[in-house]
Length: 256
Image 1 (tube, rainbow, N blue to C red):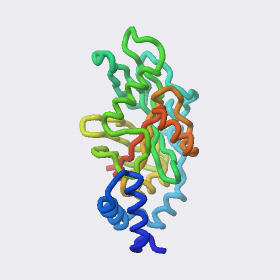
Image 2: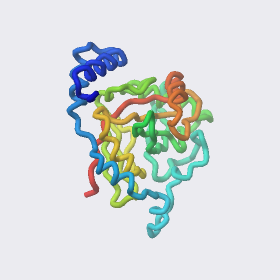
Image 3: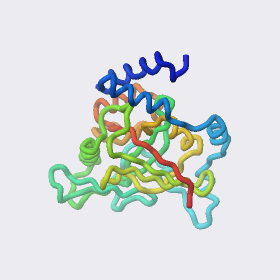
């Protein structure tokens, strides 16, 4: 049965309405928009899949370059640091108890796959607390994920794009080179730095017209898993707010 058939669209609209708490009419309009969406062609996907991607080799062959620490991370949980980590996005997180104090999270962003679709994981490599702060990342992880909740992240991965959020990617000059990635909501910038993104991953961000899941953590205490290939475990972490997530539209452009 064609995905554009009347019966298929009717079933898809009902499923979306049930999942997202929408009226059938609203869900039907969304499903019709999805049906009109033009994703990547088979040729584009094939070309992307056949493109070699080796960021470690790329960094190793650049004169005077070094491999960013986040590509070689050895720890499952953010470690305390006296200064923000190089090559990461320094993200200030205000204390909920004392907004005059803030920690700096050295955020990384890495590509992943969730239920067969491209996803992004944003997590701190290290954290730099304010002077006099008690040891431990847990408090700052809670502050961070609560702030994210206030701007649209939640305890599940929605079928719909989070209002106001967008991500832009400027491809690296060649495969293996890092891409510039910015994820933002109005004046709230979650991430703005370079990170390697595979060609096959970039090609597939156009498959879903609503965007890709962006998963952030750790929040409540358990570490972020090394990948999202166990959806049941990921959903458990979302339910306990060890992770928070939102679906974010992505625009990919070529390097100038």
